[in-house]
Amino acid sequence: MKTSVKQLKSAWRIGRWVVVVLVLALLVKGVADILRSAPGAHNVPFEYWYGHWRQALVLSAVFLAFLVGFARPRRRGEWRNAGLSAAFLISLFSEMFGVPLTIYLLAPLLGLPAWTFGMNESHLWAFALDRLGLLPLEVGVYVVMTVSTVLIAAGLCLLAVGWATVYRGRDRLVTDGIYRYLRHPQYLGLMLIVFGFNIMWPTVLTLLMAPVLIVMYLRLARREDEELATFFGEGFLDYAARTRAFLPWGRGRAMPPRGTPERHHRDAEALTGREHE
Image (cartoon, rainbow, N blue to C red; front, side):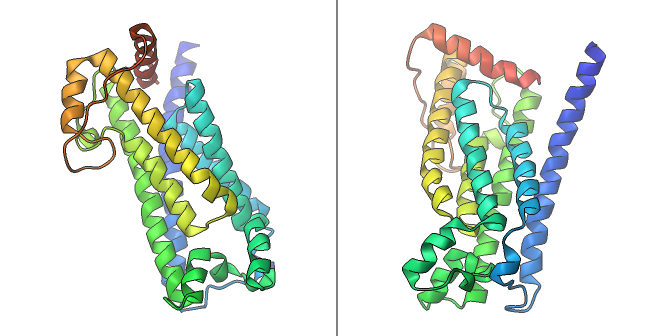
């Protein structure tokens, strides 16, 4: 039985990295298809682009597997945040490939029929740049796809590398690798993913959920600092004083613990216990 459990855990660790490779490959292929094509050649009419629920389901499943595999929610607040992140991804891909609710709401306000928005026009930031006379639509799509893909890929890499570094650290305070420069690379990665998707394909729901997600990630980061300060004491405070939470430059700022020591001790034990997986 124990051998089977170990084999399942080992397979899950390998599976997480398979998901990383798959997600990065999908992103690279998507932006490469656009950048190597002639201007306007990759545009798809409205009636052919939407209604593809298989793509929406597959992409939702892949990104949700990545989220659960590397964010590893355990406590109530983490599950709440993971649930909102899942809702963000499902609503995003549902509008990206299924039913474009945002476009149905936006088109009448602009005095346009919804079918004006094919693939190019559905990149709403690129469409806005074109309407404002700042960039032609095709160039705007290149810019939007490149910037968003870089942000999403960077976020995915931070999330995966941060997890791998902490996993190798086991029960000790991890201050090497990516954690030499950032205290919370995984939360930064999640925020970059949220920003990147809202640049690539903004929708009403994802734009509304984005600030809520960011605030929740910041609160989780603050709570982890408090727990680690209680659990590791001066070692963490010295580390936090020289390492910033989300930016790799400048001096850090230690966050003193709040609340009862007993609560933080329990939380810190739960936090370090996650590294045994």
